[in-house]
Length: 115
Image (tube, rainbow, N blue to C red):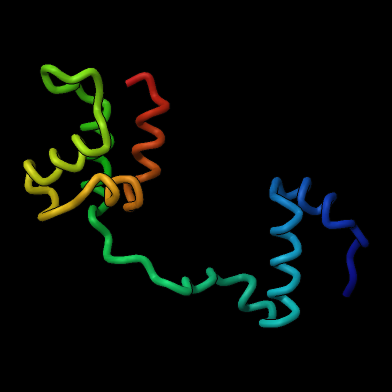
């Protein structure tokens, strides 16, 4: 079965992705087969355990949108991390964990929202 002979650029535009992504999918299809392309790719270096569950991420987003502590101009990642520890939501964390952890999408959304 063959389809239209679209160039990578046209395929990328149709799927709103970068032409390099099209190349990577094609290479993976040829080397590993259709099942490998359709399934999520396994991480070479798996990430660590999640810091927060979905409920914790929601609380973190709400915290980032809440009133800033007195004497502060705004929430910083370090302040959010310290507050997570104070609220016993996590045992120990650093602001790096807040940035790189599963809540990163929530934080980006919260940062863009007019809380």
